[in-house]
Image: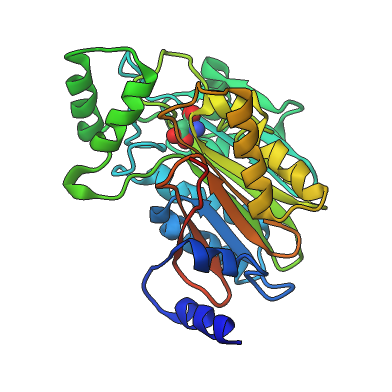
Length: 336
Ligand code: ASP
């Protein structure tokens, strides 16, 4: 009772609440009453994205609409240097975006290496709903978007151009080094670091959907695609079981089909937290000694409305919104 009261009090506050590991674990026992919706996203600043998704969920809308509208918030935010407009470019100065979406019926849509379109998630959804295919890439994805009424835009902001120019001075092609520096680039004025948004939602009808969208690794080779738009790696949904999404070094997540691995572990009885931990451990054992310095984080939800997360290293946060808890930010547990 005492523990419950403490958590409930934490949840009722109006500002963002940071729950440390212990509280986060306690919260993972149904985060919402049965039948009530919830939304969870990678990284603390995505409380804003959750709030948008909540507008859909709290009025009885579909999880699919909630995740699409939710992730459009960071896609349109010029200050978010890892998603959509304002995302850091590749090493040639081109902003290339990766997104995917999956609904409760196993429908999927994905775009990879899409340029000039601020909301790649909307194009991914259109691929899912208007084509007999599941993935469109590069020029083909752009042609499809333009044919469907999207406007071509310059996505490179002054800030992103400045950071790219700064990188060009040395032009050192070392993705791990880049990741290290991204933390500095992304934290002007000490702002919190964040990355790709992966969002999972459970709606009032008990249906689950997910979306994942990113500008990928900064200063990557042109054409490089990470895990985020790869169904099974960056995102996976099975409405009978639950859903998972990932952030971090995409090459490592793809290697273990990360999000699918998490969902399969839940299928065989693991909690969302345990399932995320299993995926991180799998990665470590597969790549023994070769993932030093990298970060990978998973979040997951199950059919009962339980949530969980696990990361390789410290520093991964995630944001949760339920009927009783607004703007909740949690620190993930980590392995090493
Ligand atoms: N997963 C993304 C990618 O590899 C990047 C990230 O989440 O930091 O493209």
